Length: 213
Image (cartoon, rainbow, N blue to C red; front, side, top):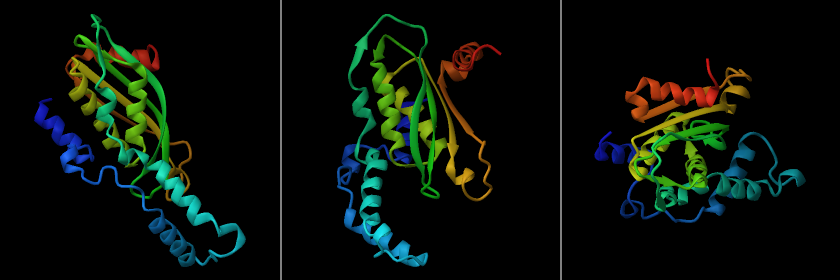
């Protein structure tokens, strides 16, 4: 995947240059959220002034500030510190728990991420992989885009020989509303470099994540 294509992929998901993101650190407007929540309560026929709902708009404002905190963070900053290491086998961090919010219904989806890369003379601290997942999940998301964002970001910043990303998640927009299939899970993958081009490398990744088949 060329550098330009990587940058285009990241830009589509909201990861663009600092010069293009002048509002990157703009604070959450709690007043607007509180007013909007109050209007929603009125629209569904509730009394926002009754005891149980009186502080709900403020609670929801604080909740959204937390759930969408990734909008005000640049995940690339987490990957700037790299270490020279003569290790050329797979690095896999699996079962990284994450929680995000579906941008279509503003309902949570949550699951686990598995991230692997083949170093090309440089490695990164393991905690940074999980921190990048945290930043990208803390924003309005769709699982498909988040999967590709992770893969493209690691390819651009680590310049490895390959990256493999697999996400498995349960979406409450499917489990508590609409079709209401409580046991359904969505699995997405994005393979780059050797993981996409080499079937045996991809098979090794799957075996490490799921066990031998």
